[in-house]
Image (cartoon, rainbow, N blue to C red; front, side, top):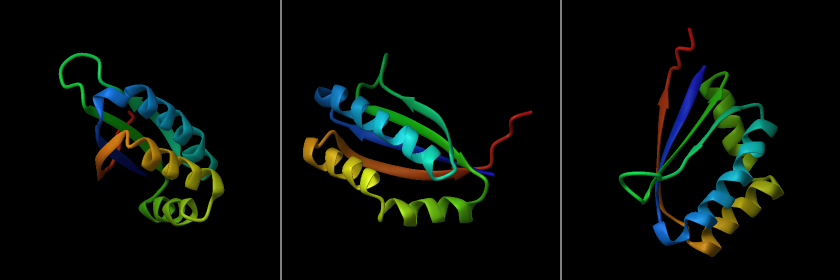
Length: 101
């Protein structure tokens, strides 16, 4: 298994838009076989950092999801929403091996 850790730098004045964007992606990751662990939005401390975590059975399965996401209409709508609203300044990905037990 591999868990994708996404760290977003968001526009704190567009937190509502980013939350909407987040809710668009949760079912999309699941649609392509991933397990989404949620988005974590700013509460206390930094007001411009958000995190997302989701797991795929392998890095190859994640790569298949990424490739499919560029061809999927719902995924494209999510990408376009973020671009239109400019709620995301930047995003970085890291991959981790989860330990659940």
